[in-house]
Image 1: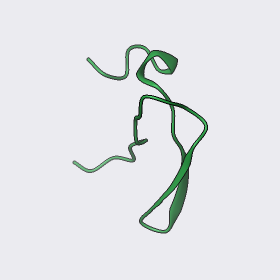
Image 2: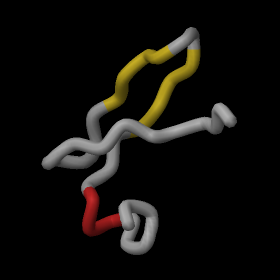
Image 3: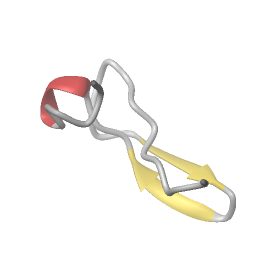
Image 4: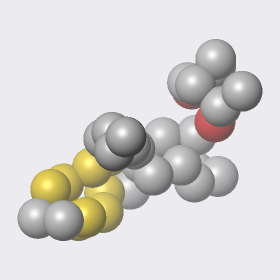
Amino acid sequence: MKRDTVPVVRHSGDEVRLDDRKYTLVREDDIPGVVA
């Protein structure tokens, strides 16, 4: 099953284009519970 994912980096605020979509990168601690 394919689901939309958000790239995770060590610093937040950057943006990246993936599959013609723009994502705002976030840190792992900004999304607790997402990475099990």
